[in-house]
Length: 107
Image (cartoon, rainbow, N blue to C red; front, side):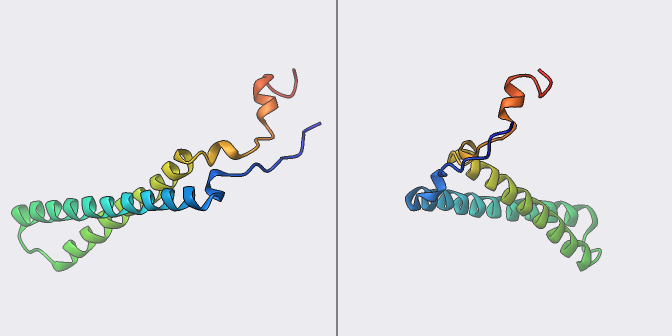
């Protein structure tokens, strides 16, 4: 019979740990924002050197495409790093842990 999940406290429940983790996350996002802008300006310079001013819409679409893609990637990966780096991932109780250890429910 599967055991009921027992909630364990997360390290993010501590306000000091949470503020440190979110500060790191904000710093990562600011850094990725700067890297995104540098990347966009480099791509714009390349497009300008190859094609000139074709259409302003090309440059707007480039800004939105590269900017949103890179910032979404940074936000999601930053949350993964925040969750893993604080020990929040280890604080869960996995009800399938017994099945994995013993090779499945049939054994």
